[in-house]
Length: 75
Image (cartoon, rainbow, N blue to C red; front, side, top):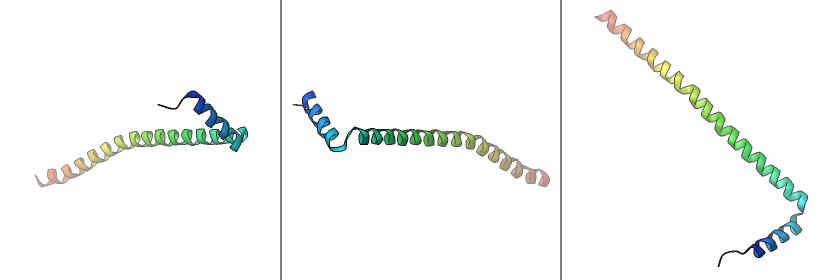
């Protein structure tokens, strides 16, 4: 009861007739570029997060040291 190969070929033929092969090629390349851009932005975000984690840890350590110094002066 699913879609047969012949039905898919007929739909593909109609789409090619409506849009033309050049337009479909442009749409495909635009879609590919968008996917590449999305993947690049996701990997850039992961790298940014990986860089921030050590900085956050370092900042937390510095804050802990800053809090310890006044305690040492009091004691």
